Length: 258
Image (cartoon, rainbow, N blue to C red; front, side):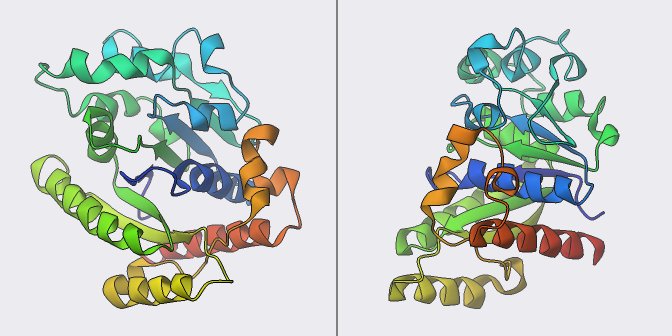
C-alpha cells in the first residue's frame, strides 16, 4: 500500500469532492476493502451521505479536535456501506479553528488521534472542507496521500495550481511524506468541447498524476444525498457507477504499483 491515509481536497466548492469520496469508498468496499471515513467538513455532507444525521451525533469530529480526552475510537459509527465506518462531523467542527489556533500542537491533533485506529482499516479517507483552514491543515498533516477531484471547467485549472502550492507548503512545513495520490476528472460533459480541452490540458500539465478513469456529468450522481449511500448500491448498472468501479480498480492498481 502506497498511501493509507488519504485526504480528498479542493479549496473550490462544488467539485464533487464528497461525492467522489463516498462513491470511491463504496466501489472499493465492494471489492473487500475496509475504510474509515473521516468527515472534517462542518457542512457534514459526508456524514449525511452515509445515513447519519449530525444533530443526532452525541460526539463527533468537533469533540475529537477540541478535547484531548475524546478519542476517535469512541465516536466511530457503522455506515450504510458494508466495510466502511465513519467518524462523523458535528456542529462543533465550526468552532475548531478559533479554539485550537493558540495550541502548540494545533496542526497535528488529527494525526495523533488517528494513530489509535488507522491500522484497523485498509484505508482512511478524510473529506476536507472547501477552505484552507486548520481543519484542512490537520487533514493534510495526517495524510500520506491527497486525491484531488477536479471538474473539467477552465476555472478549475487555476484553482488547482493554488491547491498544489498549498499542498507543497504543508509538505515542507509539517508532513514531508505527503504526496499527490492522483487527480480525478469529474463532472465531465461529453456534449461540450471545452471539457475535452480541459482534460487534455490536465494530462499535459500533470501527466501520470491524472487518473484515466473519468466521472461523467450525470443527474444520477446528485441523487446520492437522497439515497444516503453510494451509487454502487442504488444504481448498480448505471454508466457512472461503472466509472466509479473503474476508478476503484485504477486506484488499487496505482497503490500496488509503488
